[in-house]
Length: 154
Image (cartoon, rainbow, N blue to C red; front, side, top):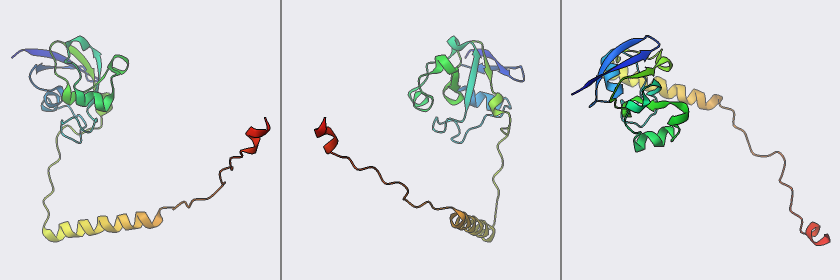
């Protein structure tokens, strides 16, 4: 199992990563905060990284990655970290993940009564939002009627 250096911007730290695992999991293990709602399943598109150099040392984009980002890597230099595997030295920019937490938050344990109260509060919030929402009704200008007479006169 070969290890390859990955330079992470903006910190400039170098992390040794293996070829077999995705860049997402290895950067998370190294303590870098990478945003992701799906946990590395290529369904949210939040774990985007910018490849600064060494793009020839990466695997080809997967079908799922192309579905989310399109086939414009040669222009944007963006890849999903959960689908990217490294086979040589690269430099990545994770500055867009600067406010992401490095560690996963622990689940909150609540009693049944507390959980019911939280759900009730959230439902009440949703009702209030729906009440305050401005509903636009249809109307305004009617479409102009098509006239057949204009074509016949020409």
